[in-house]
Length: 485
Length: 63
Image (cartoon, rainbow over all chains, first blue to last red):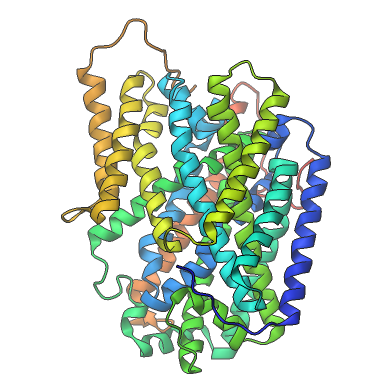
């Protein structure tokens, strides 16, 4: 499954990697000294300020899929990635901004908390928590594969060793300080990442002539590479389905809800989504153009690659100067680790808060902290072990979990927040129906006929929601959903 | 027709993406900063209309 990308050992790159890991580990250990109770560990004591929250979200958002997968995707299909994926992600961030006031006011810590709150069924917590654990675990594997492939390529250290080194570092600092360590390392990683991509972008601008020259040369390679639909490769229906899937994934990821809960008030919650959306929309536009520049640079230098995920690593090892190479490595490591630690942290809180505490409602705070830490270690180690020989490519896993999350949670959860007398059974049934049909049809053939799986999942969830609510008689002693304020 | 070396339609997608990512920021600046509308958890607190605040306060990390 894993093809080791041959690379020459570069002492500068290896030294930059080691120093960076030590810096992040040190910050994580420092975070441990500021973690006093389980609320600190889970949600930063619900006292995260605007700047820390914003940069932590930015750093969490940009992952190995973004830097390696997206640049590889531009290498293959050009700028059409903007149309079907990044536009959906940006609409998702802004969309979440417009409902975050209601979400924050509910004062829930996790997505299962939110589902239980709006449905009135506490059993929704372990059920949805299990779905989210599966999603987070897949994401961890993707991140570790991406990080380890890259560092192997640029340092020459064998892949199977690099997986365990990177896995160990992020497990240690996440398990020590929880969201306190994660957020502070994110702040550093986010700033490094954005600055480094901007520096690399400017370098490539000068190297290839200008912004216009990059696009014109990419168009000269193949005009489809600068076309929004890759000249018809993507139909309007496919694009719409992908936009909806990625739009919905922003609303339904566990770590997004945890971050909203960690903000100190609604103002901060709004600021961090507004600020992150502004920064990320520019960042991704630059990143996609950088992908175009990478494609042009490699092809014009006779450095064409067979595996698109190798495009960015080859640019670092064989094209740019060592100084720029170090800058890029820091950016990529920041992108990868900041997302990985957040997902790992989410597995701990999901296990303890959403699943364990459901079965042990009287568990002491110290016990919940211990369960969180044990789960963090277990999921971290098992994901690292799986990443040695992963079950699919990065981009396949990325799309699969977006369809799953959106199909299962988007319609029932967010409709319920504003429809206060919606039947709780309808919400739970819609989560199950949408999730099963969305995931099932995606695994089988990506949909049914011309209808993509994201639409099938969302459509199923909507129909089940309405049918159960209107046709099943209400129970007199059923739960009473609050539906927010 | 091309803009910056890419088809106009592709250029418009870039513009649309940047606008999409900034919808929240635009709302925040217009509604909460310029118009001074309170946040959801401040509804029960008397607010003055000129209590404008920047999107991100410089130097404020966490206190």
